Length: 135
Image 1 (cartoon, helix red, strand yellow):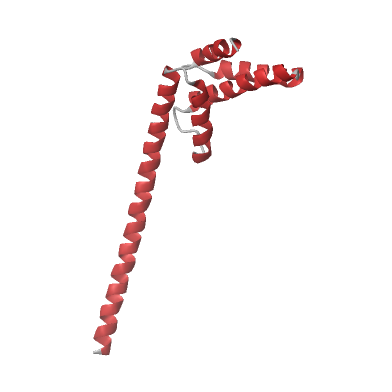
Image 2 (cartoon, helix red, strand yellow):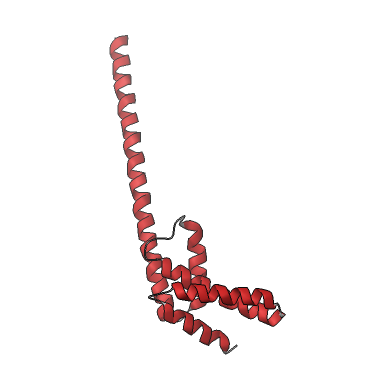
């Protein structure tokens, strides 16, 4: 009877271990699936913000999700450039108001570099410049 009981317990332990391994793989798949959905949501959010000229929110969206994604998701490169351009444009205004010409010139150089890298959303740089020039 003892041998039979030990064999039953061993079978139950092996089945439980297999069940745990199976659950770990299922959880991993769900995490990956949710991360892919999150990337798509961020892209939709970015497109919405660009279409409504909400460039402050573009920068917020980028910098919030930049910490979440270790690499820039495919197709998100332009949003990164737009967010960095908006940040540099804002900082240019700050430095010009403070009279810090050295940092302002560095911002102008960075903005020109970012604008040259933009392709699809190059118009956003012009709109950001236009918006901030009125202030």
